[in-house]
Length: 213
Image 1 (tube, rainbow, N blue to C red):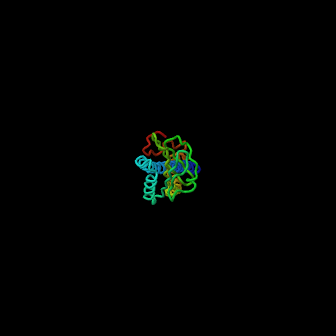
Image 2: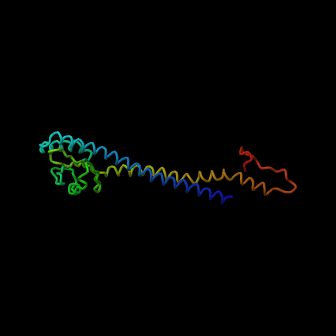
């Protein structure tokens, strides 16, 4: 009976640990997707502001650069950076916080109106601005994703602590459940061992389970 209880406890613990691990993996995937989707939406909004400014001020490129610079400075606390490129990918202007790895990163998929790119720890949204009779430009608005990764790591650490607590409690709860589940079987074995031909009136106790067993 002890062996049966131990096996039930081990199986129960293994199932709970597997579910906990799967939940942590799923939580990481979902949390990362949510954080990056929110970041992309904010970057897309910032890039759209630049596009609107360029459409309003074009072809006065100096005024466009001044407006982009003002918007870039207003988002410095969010670690945003901006870059304005020509149709073939040459840099016209970039903000002070624009990392060299992004500034020197060759543009690709230039025929797309929008493109989201991850370059090392940096992520940016590139929008293509093409107007009839006007030069075509590309605008990059990006941010450092280190903060997003740190938030994700902090969340996973908290969830891991909860998972470890469950892992420590599961064997105890599993052993208690195994004892509860196997107690009727133990009673059967004990009474069956005491049965004698002269004592056929012995009966098993019924604990609300009717007569299924």
